[in-house]
Image 1: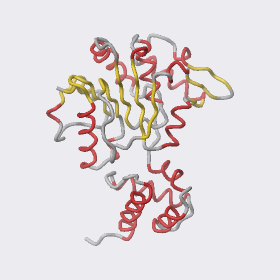
Image 2: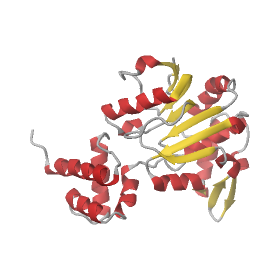
Image 3: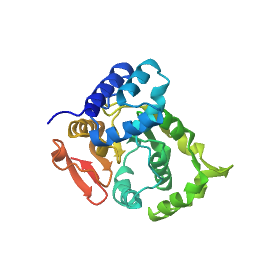
Image 4: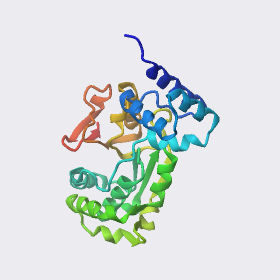
Length: 272
């Protein structure tokens, strides 16, 4: 079957991004990536992906804006509350036996899940001895995550999710509302390190007891999924925990045998 022109342009564009900016999207799921790049081309008033490539090569200021199209930033605090309830009931009792903890939230986007974990750890009395690494490839998203500022009209959903997760306090204890925004507390940020990290090109930087990477692998092809899961395996200490998204599995992975299921429905695994 002949390769369509748009597929040729797509491959050349991804090569150009890698060679020029060292961001590697070549292992991402192509159907989703193509759709988002076509939307980006329309946004930047480029008729073709080749025109978008020309602009990226000669107008570097375009790339940070394009990253917002290439990286999905859809999240909410305590998203999938049963996941956080399972962490609270099945994982926290094990983690509480460590004198100090390191947690990695990979693909943290704009930070909603990071603050959710920080609040959960605070409620369970573990935050004081915990360091959370929050990483993403999108520096704009990381800046928003570090700011910890969310529109106040999202707080009702966040609060409902928090309550369903088995909350031991009120979410309002952790933010201050002003001028249409909720600003999350500095006491949470004090335990979080925000950093640029790519699951496609970077290596492990720390050993952690809990690694949460949810709704990221679904945007990768099989080869890149294997690389990412290999990184997770390497980063986790023995008996460390891995949390994935509701549509993400270790089944059929080359690393499957390195993990046992802890809570199947909530995609929580433990390294053997």
